Image 1 (cartoon, rainbow, N blue to C red):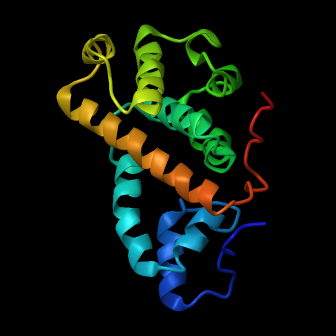
Image 2: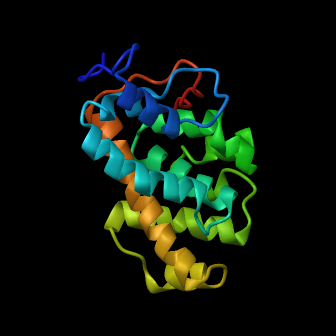
Length: 186
């Protein structure tokens, strides 16, 4: 059971408008539990929306690269909630196949699926950031072969943002969305 229960309908008008902004049009289910919990503090939710929506909808990284980073960060953070949301929706839309998604949950994701050199560099970068909070020069150099400076900055923010989201979901003990992809057993 979650430590904080998500809001349930009927929502106050301002919360209803805000939650509808957070969800893509035509989605057949309720707003995410994470969003409904965040709206227990609407001001914080509003500040978080700006960065989260910007990274997902207006980022400079290719969608598949963004989703590889998110899948690996959330897997390394043991955040089944957020991993399952992205694995069910955004990751397949971006072009990640089930084998690649499963590979992001294994200790050596770089050998668990057919990855391009660019994607292998992303996986190594996320692992280094997770393990050491830094990037080695060789990992930075590998990333620079594929990304411009603005994309590299976004990559670092993206990884940190999804670490924050993982802390939030894990700290709240959010239950996985019923339609989310189950986190693979290790």
